[in-house]
Each structure stands twice: as structure tokens, then as C-alpha cells.
Image (cartoon, rainbow, N blue to C red; front, side, top):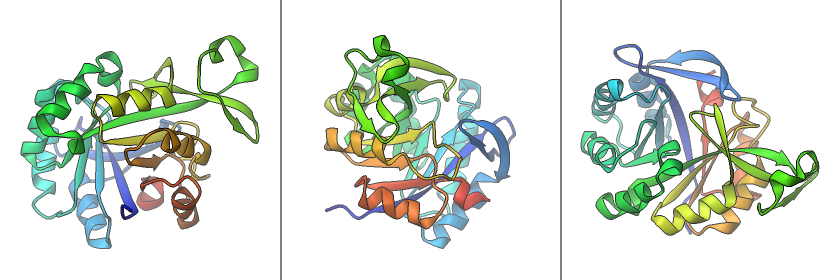
Length: 254
């Protein structure tokens, strides 16, 4: 059995030279939280198991800035680092790993080109390929047509399926998150970074139904993300949803 992990997440805006960590609510209402290198160092010293750093600007022009952040960060942080945002090519994986990251997460690029996961896993290994899935509940009663062919899950609020979003939550795909997670595993992804868009930044708790549904349908580790507000929520992710890791931002930053 794998050891359960607690992972701080740094959403990084690279529009400034050294980057800055920000946090929103349901992917909106962005607030400034601090310097990425300073925060990563603090969380490492506080006992974090890993750190995820996501480039929310994700522009090619700022790739050098993220490399610089990772190089400076890994001078003093000696736990696994996962980098996400703007990972579009196999070369992006190799560049970030060379800078000191241990794995890379991709979302939008993989949905547009699923072969990316296959190719990347062959070059850097499945352990370094993380699929990011940002999912939102869709209630069957509200649109039965859209629910056709989807994996339906029962909740206290009614039957739902989970819709994958891309571009940082700005666009929905109509893709079934459970089926997509299974495909990603088959293509070589070694881990799922699963964010509930309904819970993101709310501090109301993880979407345990979503997390358990994904976890029950794949064999690779699932990181629960989106909504943690207290230590009890982390315990629930482990004990109820059987997540391999719990990721949090707001609870640590503010």
C-alpha cells in the first residue's frame, strides 16, 4: 500500500519576473498568496510530501520563467516536484525534468492530442506523466440528452456525470471524466491530478463522490484536489474516497 501524501499546490502567475502564487474560488476571484520559491521552501520545511506548481498563465513566452523558478526552488526543496501548465510537447516534459522537476501534469494539451501521453510516457516514464483532470458535476435531470453514454454516478443531490474542462476551467468539453481517466491510464499516464471545479477554493471539502468514482475506475494513484478547508477533509479524502494524495492550496496559503 502506498503511503498517503499531503501536497501543497502553488498556482503560479508568471507575468512577473520571479512569478507569484495566486489562488481563486471556483477558478475565479484570484488573490495574491506569495512568492513560489519562498512558499515551496516553507512547505518543505513544514513537512509536505510533495509540491505541485502550476503555471496558470501557461504561455510559451514564459517557459523560461518557469524553468528558472524550478531551478531556484529545487536548490532548497528536496521532495518530489510536479509542474503543470503549458506542457504541450514531449520536449516540455524533458525540459522541466532537466530543470529539477520529478513529473509533469498536463490537461488541455492531452485532450487535444491524447497521443502526447503515450509519447511522453515512452520518453520519460509513466511515473513522470500526470494527467490533470478538472471536472464539474452535470446533473442528469437538467440535461438528459448530454448524459447519454456517460458514466452516471448517484449522489445525494441526484444522478450526475462529470464533465472535463480545459483552458483553466474556461471551456467545457462534454467529455466523461471517468472514461477519460481510464483512457489516460491506458495511454501511459502514471497518476491523476483530479480537481473538482465545484469545490475549488470553497473550503467546503473535496468532492468525495467524484474522487471515489475516478479512483474506483483506474489503478493508478489519484490526487484529490479542490475544496479542502480543514484537516478533517483531508482525512475524508483518504478514508472515504481512498485517494492516494490530498492536494490543497487555500488552507495553506491563507
